[in-house]
Length: 193
Image (cartoon, rainbow, N blue to C red; front, side):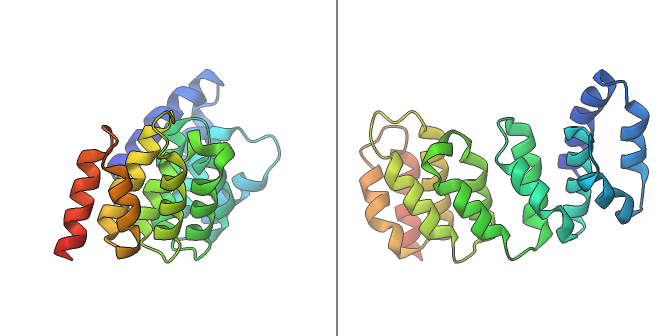
């Protein structure tokens, strides 16, 4: 069991206990039946915690039936759900994932929830990654923008991806105190690459 799965099951145990359904969670953790997990994703009146564990397990196993649920969780207001969804989406191998993550990262109305889609784009290293990170960062370079964590994740991601197209934006990030160090590191990677 990896650390992300352990964290997920610990968190969801609290939710299942609060709902009076600890046995239902234990069953979803114990089952080896992917069909049972897939049914959880579409059955009416299943709690979010049940859908999350089913989607996570299916996604990590490469079962694309988990895709839609994982994308919804990637855009959730609860950061812990986003982290788990990003983890599973990175392992899923679905070709729709980069496009979905890019759409979430660049949605100006959802910037407060863009941190995990930005980080996922960096991990995926897909053709959509650099353009989406650049689009998101460009919008966040206003010194008064409150979403500095998302901007920092964009700068760090662009540094890891080391794409020359990002140079002007990374240079524009240098004067920002919260971004300067990461921008310098990213530009150093471009020079080294």
